[in-house]
Every structure is written in C-alpha cells, then in structure tokens.
Length: 397
Image (cartoon, rainbow, N blue to C red; front, side, top):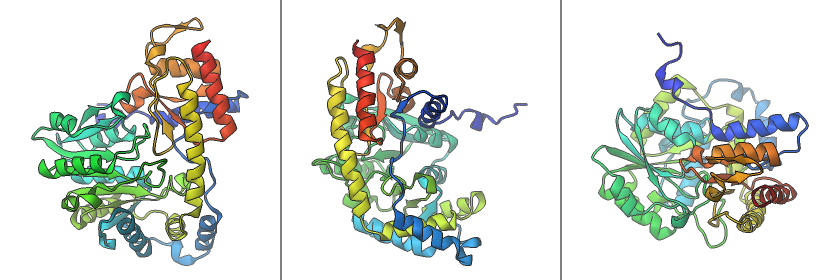
C-alpha cells in the first residue's frame, strides 16, 4: 500500500515558488542573483493597514473563533466593493472569505466540479489552476493561445474544445503569466458563449487594478448579467495592496454555491485569521491612493522590460497590458549552442541562465506554454535593468 495517496502524490511543487526559493538560496550563499520569478509586489503593505492589524491584535474579540465564512463587516465590504467594481449587484450572503485567492480557487473547484467534469483552461495559465481542477476530480482541457494571438483565446477556440462534459471555463483578465488583458467586446463575446453553452465561469480578478495604457478591467458577469447564477468571482487584497503574506482572499457567487463552499471551509480551515481579516477590511476602506502609486511604478517598469526584451535578438514578446509580468518566447534559443551548452527546453534554459548569468525566471512549461518564460517586473528599477542586461549578454554574446 502506497504511503502517499495518489491524489496528493500527483501534485507537483509550485514552480514559481520553487524558482523564488532557488534564487533566495543562491543569494544566501553569496551570489548576486536577480530574480524575475516573484509573483508578488515588492512594496511593503501600506502603513494604515498594518496599524489596523496592530489595533486588532489588542482586541480580545479577535482572539476567538469567528464565523467560518468570514467576519460580517468584511463580507459586507467585499460585497460593496464587488458591486462597485464589477457592476454586478452582490450581497454579503454571496461572499466567502478565504485564506488567499488560491484557497478560493480550490474551494470553487471542489464545490462546482464533479469527477470527470471537463474544465476549459486557456493557456498560458497560472500554475495552480490545473492542480486545483485535478484535485476536484475534474479534467483540465487546455486551450492554447500564443504570442501571435496576444495570449487571448477566441470563441472559436473555446467552441472547438467544448464537449457535453464541459462544466466550467477558467477566465483570467488581466492575466498571470502573460499580462494579457481582454477587450470589453472579447469579454462579452466569451461570456455570451458560456451562457449559450450552459458553462459555468470562474473569473479570477486578482489583478483587476493593475492595468496600463488603454487597457481596462472588465468583469464578465458584470457585462453579461445572464451569468449571474453560473459565475464565481475570485479576488483578494494580495496584489492590489501588497498583502500576499496576509492570506486574505474571497469567493463571490450564487448563494447556494457560497453556502456549500462555506460548509467545506467550516470543516477544513474554519475562519480566516481574524487580524488579517481586519487588515483586509482596512485595505478595502482605505481608498486607492497607495494602489495607484504602486500601479504607476509597475507601469514604468513594464515599459522598461518590454523595451529591453524587444532589443534582444531572437526574443519575441507581446506588450503586457496588465498584472506585472512579461511572457516572451525564447524558442529561438533552444536546441542550439549557448556558451558551450544546449538547452532543449525553457526549463533547461532557465537552469543555465540562473547558473551562468545569475538571473532567475520561471520557464513556460510551468504555465502550459513550452518555449516561453515569465518575467516579473515586481522588482526595483535598477535591478530590473541589470537583470535584462545580463540576460541579453548571455543570449546574444
């Protein structure tokens, strides 16, 4: 009899966290590594949020268990925020507070997906989606879109992937890892397609406030209200308020789905940390000034990275319009000699670049897109530019 269940043994380590850990280990050993792997803002959590948490620590009310589905005042605030930002009328009873957005994704999949249900998963995708689908017993059906499509899937591509077993579509805009942002017309067309085919939609809005240039965040259930009873929104404060370590996210959806997911949470984690919930409440009530200043810094870095990647011979890159990632194609550097070594995959290329140039990035295989790579621009400007110079020197010399 196996020591580890097949279900859990099939899960691989998060590649993004693995790259970050490897870069950190090399730095600890004295190497000057520049890491483009981080999926988190490089800013401190705003001070007013930290102050609210410190005050909550001293309040005995928050030393005890609270409602498994979340503090009532935070659920109300999330409902208000969701209604305002999506255009979809939401009540507190449609909100479940979770241990980060990742937990909300697992809860949504566990609640909606049955054994052998198919889930349409546009690629490149964030590394956790397929694992969450499989753990729920579902089957990920990958729908590819490359740099030539701007990393955006079409209705025709979804139509070709649909079968009578299709239960759900994962939709992400702005996208991790590509930085792609769908237009209003594209979002509406896909939403209409989902309604016509009776397909649920899980829309991950975690990067909603990080859009640049003429791009805009558009909520699919907000502009296609017919999805109201067959859509789940996942979101949180991690990216918008530099709170990745606080672990507060949420799931918004039909009341019966949220009730079922709340029952699951009552038996798995119980309530999210009360102090962190109060911090998230302060974040949502605190306005958008700190969010906007962070967004402006990311926009500046985005332009620098896009320009410098485009100047490297052989790199193909689509301009990112959201989140804080670029997703260039490095296919031109595979299966050819580079400083005496040959990489047959971007995973092998990432190992070589880390070893020889002391630059860390996440290979595209982790995102269902071999030949590509994710570079985060959530790092200081000088570090970003030096890292790009090192990469260019290694690839083009």
